[in-house]
Amino acid sequence: MMPARPPPVLVRYGQPAGRWVLLATVLGSGLAFVDGTVVNVALPRIGTSLDANAAELQWTVNGYTLSVASLILLGGSLGDRYGRRRVFVVGVAWFAAASLLCGLAPDVDVLVAARVLQGVGGALLTPGALAILEASFEPQDRARAIGAWSGLGGIAGAAGPFLGGWLVQVATWRLVFLVNVPLAAVVVAVALRHVPETRNPAATRRLDLAGVVTGATGLAGLTYGFTAWPALGPTAPEVLLALGLGLLGIAGFVLAERRSANPMLPLEVFASRAFVAANLVTFAVYAALGGVFFLVGLELQIVAGFSPLEAGAALLPVTAVMLLLSARAGALAQRVGPRLPMTAGPLVCAGGLLLLARVGAHASYLRTVFPGVTTLGLGLSLTVAPLTATALGSLDDRHAGIASGVNNAVARAAGLLAVAVLPLAAGLGSARLTDPAALAPTFRVAMVLCAGLLLAGSAIAFASLPAGAAGAATPSAPLPGSPVRFHCAIGGPPLQPRRPRPPREA
Image (cartoon, rainbow, N blue to C red; front, side):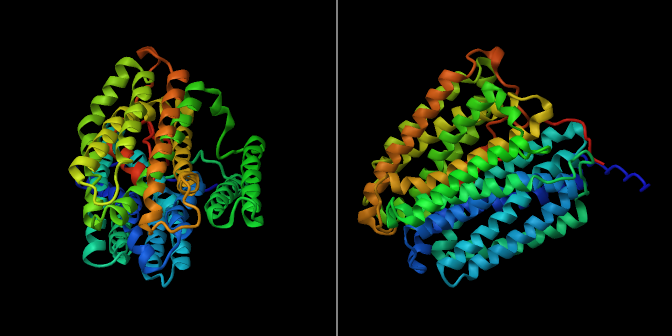
């Protein structure tokens, strides 16, 4: 019999060992968080440099999101089984290699392929960062460590678009990807030297490969079909085949999870009405946000004439409002229950998008952009705290990790499909997203459609969630409205912390 593996030495918050662990996890997850926002700002220059059409720009965003949405639950399982630090380090190194390929891409086809590979790295490192914090810190310090991780992630979220705009403006869009390589080298060095290895000895020995394959096939088929639709038409064999394969993949995923002895997504969790409602609201809200932040950077630069730096800085009020009001919104949700803020928040967000729909040629930032982004920030401040708390608090502790992973995957899938569908639904046709005459009307219609999604989310919350404080979900630590939640919304959907609990790892 093999000797039992000794338990890891847990670190303390505020001590040198704890600071090293925080550095590795914050910087590592920051690579994935910031990448999405920076790429959105760089899209106009990428389109011009590589002569990319609308579908190719969509895939520049969706190639990454597709990989992450398909594989993030698997990434968490691999960390539990083979070691959180090991999988995290592999993910960071993979992300860096793919970033290098993105930065050197000679054409848009290579760039999209590299973005898909980059998403694989993101799916490995993203769940690992939070799992490392939970497994490495003493129980009494975990909430503070995760709170610090969230706050620093929020700062990265605020700086990401600004930094990306500056890099694009003073140098080249390629630096947006190449800057990841030295940062990743620092993360790997710190993690290997200072982060303790942990794993879950109770983790299943069998991976749900059928669920991974069918889920990825479903998302890829639907994304490809809707992205190709404007150029090829709805009756094109290629479009019909992709959409049919996507639907079969989704059906196969449900069947695989129903039959699997160790499912990646236990279907029993959907017996909770609050959990289902929270994830439906998540889908509506993050589909809207995915479309908004894909198109806003394009509209500001191509139609309104903003520089990349100005476009990157234009959204800073949203993050500033979130930093100021998230904790208060979380406390309000604790007192009055989730239904009121989750109903009102998307309504306010919808108002912000209708204000943003006015952005056009030579738009004034103070008169046209600032009111919209500030109103959007106010709505998100009301929405994200109870949304996260309800998604995590509607299941028991046994399924806390599943609740976090499912809500994460739902949000990513929503953004993925929104970027694929919105240009089609807004009437772009076969025109280019870098053509001001085609983009301007598409943007206006898309903002109205995204506002409609938010109204649908508000209606779902009002009809399905408990009204009183007695039904309010218990928040995890840190406060569920932490800035990192919002930041992931614009650069990639959220990673929610699991409830701190005594370590089971060995």
